[in-house]
Amino acid sequence: MTITDETPLWVAAPALLAARTDDFFGRWRRALKTLDSEDIHDLRVSSRRLREGCVLFSPLYPDGLARVIRRVRKVTRLLGPLRNADEAVFFFRELSVALPEPCRESLGVLMGRQEALRNVEHRRLAKGLESLGAGKTNSAFVRAMARPAVFPQPPVAVDPFTPIGSFAAAALDGSLADLLPLVPSARDEEAAAAQHALRIAVKHYRYRVEILSFLMAAEGYGDIHATIKAYQDCLGTMHDLDVFVDMVRHGGLPPEVECVILNAIAERRGKSFARFGELLGGHPFELIGEEVRRAL
Image 1 (spheres, rainbow, N blue to C red):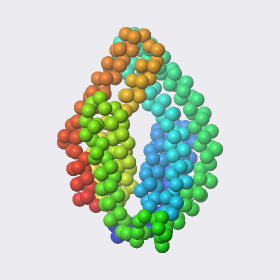
Image 2 (image 1 turned 90 degrees about the vertical axis):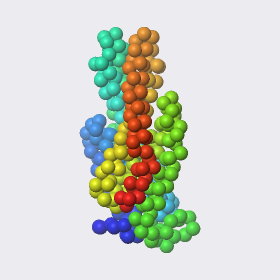
Image 3 (image 1 turned 120 degrees about the vertical axis):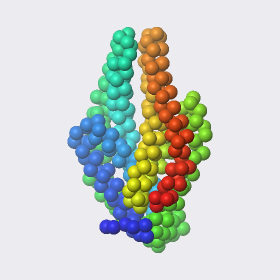
């Protein structure tokens, strides 16, 4: 099916959601089969994209796709602890190579704890994905998404005959408007909570841009996506480092070793924050919004 910017929303939305759903369940089955770290990561990202798609098009459905969103969220949350443990093991292993010998033993202790947690989460994940039932869930999703309100009653908040191009422009402007007020607070290097909130908003904006990217010129979209991803990667790195700091502080390490490790993490966070500042100076979010409007 070919979707253009003039395709009515009630036709385009189910087709776009079906594509995201197929990707999600394909990755679900693969992750359940392999329990490979990258397959788990890919499933987690796919679940977030599908959930964002459901939220994006929810005004078209009388129930707002609430049941679908709740079920997808269950999968996302089920995947989180294992992915977090994988990230911690990878980071502490890499850090141990860069730090002197007294730190390596303590980092080995932290890695051991995370590896033990990872083994527990592997078993929990396999059991959880199996119990949720991909086949049954897939059928329920297909039924829910195939029934947009063509002749809407008052609860439906959007005209189903709106061209998808017009809907996309308004939706992306709205998502950017939610993001922009979070930027000033995030400019403070010590404002970890503000940076975390911005990271989440950037993630939602990125997924919406990806879902609607078929409406954009290929060259323009490539540059837009690369910039948004750079923001998300930078903010994500800072958030991960904040999580690792908490692990170190609660790890019961010798004070002198803890200090060296925390200083090393702080140095890396400082570099990420500097990169964040460069992005804000060279390619602010307002400019990204202008580029998106031109590309549509």
